Image 1 (cartoon, rainbow, N blue to C red):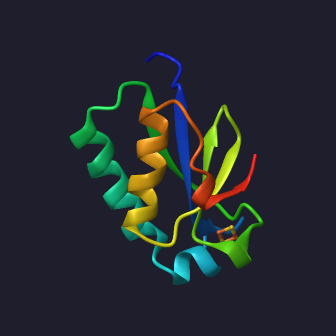
Image 2 (cartoon, rainbow, N blue to C red):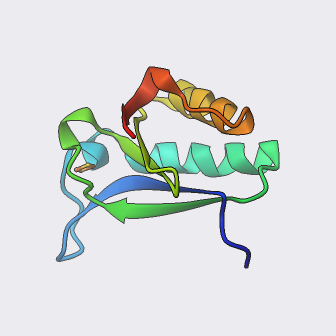
Length: 102
Ligand code: FES
C-alpha cells in the first residue's frame, strides 16, 4: 500500500478501555464516518485513507476529524462539512470554514 496523501482520522470517542464515551460518539460520528467512506469512494479519491480513532481532546468542538500528514483538525457537524472538506482536498487547499487548528 502506498503512503496516503490524506489520512482522515474521525474521532470515535474510544477510551483506553475500549469504551466509547464523549461528544463525538454522542453526536454520532460513526454515521459521519460511513458517509465519508462512501463519498471518498464515489469521488474516487486516490491516496485518501480513512480510520477511526480515540478521543483527540477537541471534544467540545466535536465531532472532530484530522487530516494527516497536513495536520489539519476539522469540526464535522454534518455531511455538508464532509463535502466541503473533501472539496478542499480535491482542490489541494484547506477548508477554512470547518478548520479548528492546523
Ligand atoms: S470525544 Fe472526540 S475529540 Fe474527544
